Structures are given as structure tokens and as C-alpha cells.
Image (tube, rainbow, N blue to C red; front, side, top):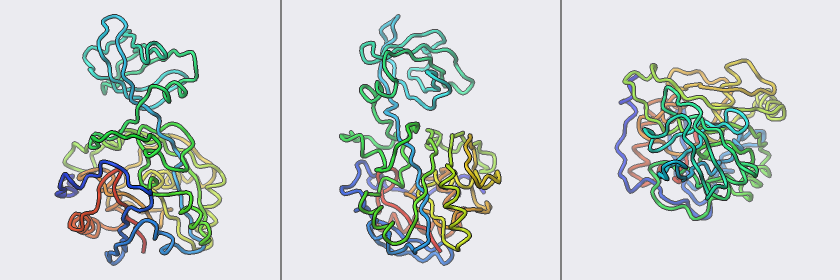
Length: 341
């Protein structure tokens, strides 16, 4: 398949710039992955489509306020930094702007000296490794001086940082939110549980590679970015039990999907963790996931390819046509799809 096969026309005004209040008031397109049938509902209607014995798999990763603005200590020049992932204690892989002047040995000060970082290595892909020095816990400092790393297509200011976090986020480490989970409220989660549906928590720290465009014509030549995941024993047991009892494993977001499918691909059905660069596109055979809750994704992205792998190329592209026609809101702060049989 060609990358251009996954293109579609999206009016700019359908890109959601701000989240809705309350969270679960967003629209929900319900798509039958076998027939292509489409229903139009709201996210608060989700429990109506779940059955006792089903399992929701949620990604509890929490977004780091990873965008920093600082100054070079030697020249006073402005520097913008984006933390991508922690490589070891105090050492992070980062994106630095302007990149040409960000050479090895350069020292950058943030928050009037609350945090300083030294560039220790320029990698082949242009990312920088930076060793940080701060008097407090770095995450506490980031909470004071860091900004949320909103995707480039969101230009509106986010007044409440928590609106780019899920209500169940707890494990710090993501450079972007697992956005399908943004629609849940504590009350909706309780309604799901009251329906007899179990909830399993896994962790996948979302990398900015999520937003990187596919630059090759042939989909199969694309190299996925690497992300770290963890499946605790409790979640693994719930998945196994659900499968054994004939329930459905429904992943909240493509990150939860990639987590459980990565583990299944490696034959790891107990507690497991590690790096994954799994790339799911049409032709992939799903080993664990039976249903998916997801937002509407960028044209030609790996995420729309994953959706197409799950419910079929024709059904997916038709659903996106309908979403545009029906004026659904797109991307991170947009509306959602529920894909089931």
C-alpha cells in the first residue's frame, strides 16, 4: 500500500483547538468493523455498547510539561527545548531549536537557573542528549517552568494543563497525551464498572514520533519510532481471563493497542515491559484486541493505518468521509470513534 492511499481532505476548521467541557460530551462515531455500519452518538453513551465481561485497556501514562524555554549561558541566545525520553538518571533525549547552534558542550539555563542542561551528544537524527543539573527533583521543576507539548496543529493556548492529561494518568513519561482517554470522566468510568466491565491499566510513554509524517511512498518501508511500555501482572491476568471467558478486549487508544499487541507478538502474556517499535498497518493479524476507542487521526499517519488494519481500509476511509461531512472534530482535542463488531 502507498502512503498516499491514506490521504483525505480535511477542512482546517474541523481541527479541534480546545477540549470540550465536560470531557464526555464529545461526539462518538460507532463503527461496525465487519459491516461498516455507522451510528452517531456521544461519548457518554459508551456504556450502552459495552457488555458485562468486557475489558477496557487504558494507558495511564502522564504527559510531562516537556517544552522548555531557556538561554545559552555563553551567548544569552534563546533556546527552545522539547524533552522526548529519559535515557538514564538526569540524561534526556531532546529536540532543540535552533539546532545549528546547539553543539556539544553548550550549556542552557532554564527558569532563571532553576535548571541547567549541558548538551553531551548530537545524535545522527539531530536529536540532542542533554545532562541536567537541578537542586530539586527534575519533575517538580518541570511542573513549575515547563509547558505542555501540544501538537503543532493546536495553536490555541491551553489554560488548564490537566485538560491534556487523562483523569487516570499517573506514570510520568509521555511527550504527548494518549488522547482517546481524554474523553473519560471519573463518573463515566464508574458507569462502565457498574455495567460489569473490567478496566486494566497499562503504560506506554507516548513519543513525538506519533506526529512525525510518513515520508516514504511504500508503507512497508516506514521505520517506526520506539516507545517504552509496561504491562503489570494484574493487567495481563485480566486480559487472559477476559479472553478465556469470551469477553472483548477493548483498547482505549492506539497506544494501548500497540502495548497489548507488542506483548502478544513477543508471546509475553504475563507481566512484561520493554521498548516497542511495532508498526500496525493493513495485513496485520490482531492477537489480543477485539475493539478500539480512538480519535480521528492525521491523513497519511501511522495511526490511520492502524485503524485501517483493524476495521478494513474501505470502512475506515468511508468513516472519515462521513466524519468530515457530519462536521466531527478532529485530532487530539476532537471527537472519538468506537470500533467493534
